[in-house]
Length: 158
Ligand code: SF4
Ligand code: SF4
Image 1 (cartoon, rainbow, N blue to C red):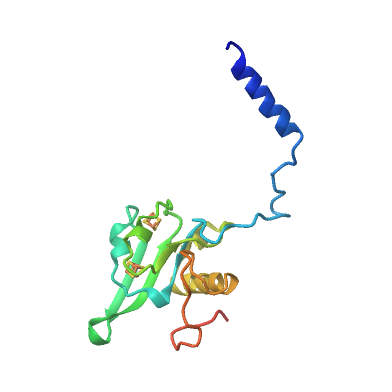
Image 2: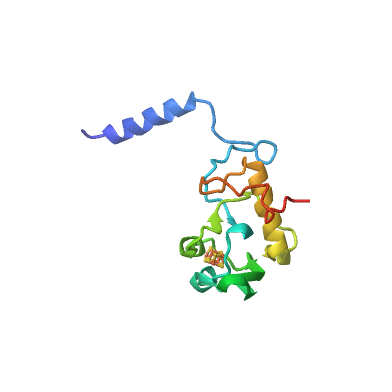
């Protein structure tokens, strides 16, 4: 029927006019972010084997992994760095990682006043990851249980 679309549109407008707004007055108010929201990238040192698959998968070349030989043909991860100045949050590194050591999730309000502070080294990434676990009941962004805090490899944030 001619004009039916207009009437439907008007009905939606009228209905919305009498419902409470869903906008949030950020930064005074903050929305509750779902646990598994893909808000950022977080790297978990305790899961990383240093295989460099993530670095090879990254189209921007913004992941640096440097290793040294460890025991039993493993690697010691000497350096792990992400250049968030270049990262486009495509998530290819997350998909490529065989050990779920880099996961989609983390701080939503990840702005920096100094641009170069978006280049993060292993220590900074580990601090952010451990803060994430502390704030989320020791659960990883993918919903799995976090590391055993009594383990010798787990280093709580100072
Ligand atoms: S999200 Fe994409 S651009 Fe960013 S580090 Fe991962 S692969 Fe590279
Ligand atoms: S984050 Fe994953 S893919 Fe990257 S070096 Fe560590 S284990 Fe390998």
